[in-house]
Image (tube, rainbow, N blue to C red; front, side):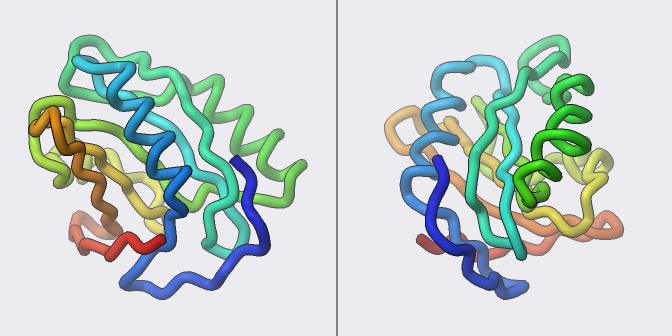
Length: 144
């Protein structure tokens, strides 16, 4: 889902186009009851492409992006396209869209936005964004 020219993001907001939101929610719904996961690539902090990745974690309450996919994206595909990881997303099939303790512990990209799609209310998926740095969680406003 490539879009036009990137826009500069502020620290307290993250512009996520509607079609990218829909793609993330659709991925979460397809993978439920397992957590889905993926990457949003962008330029200058602005999203340009959603990449679905494989969750290799056991069970339904954790995600781990397939390391081979992550390495391929981060060190081959994204540099070839002049983009970088601007957001990492995953779903919470049964819990709220807020980082768990494990999510905070495993937040290895301090400059990325962490997007969480909750399916706790099956009729109304909830997608929220966060910055996680030094174990501190700061919610960012998602705009379109």
